Length: 234
Image (tube, rainbow, N blue to C red; front, side):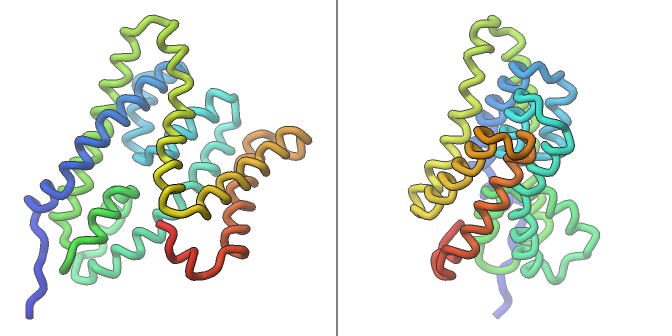
């Protein structure tokens, strides 16, 4: 029996919830970028070149804290390493696709677009993934611009208060994962304790402290969690 190949139109339909969901979150990023005094061009390039929500919000926080650029890049790389595994997983289902498409498709992978693509039955196609990822990408960039322009019109007191939005955003990202597995909570607490200990005892510069927290908490999860529990992680 010939397996179904998804079309460009099906990619649009599957990606519609992502387009609707990304826009307000990207607006929040644009608003917060304005409060950190990043230019409109740099904010747009952030979304155009990185296209990774959690990493972008984390980078804003690190910029606000005065962390060195190299440390921010390395921390962002570590946070996004999971995308390499997602790309490899989807590549297995794209065996008939010309290799020149793979870098573009890999760039468009986010947690949400991967989740949508991964549950599709049958063979994935380039038009389907381009529609799914491309319109999500445009929604993210457009939301960033809209949020930044909105932030330019807000009073200074309101923009200052929006700084708390960074922490609210991380909470919004973390809580749904904790509801899926208590192991996420323990690993998050462990990473926080490592970072706090480094800050208190000044063992490493602040940027490297964050990187050390990510690496050590990840190693702890790899070594201490049973294999079955790791497989259940998203």
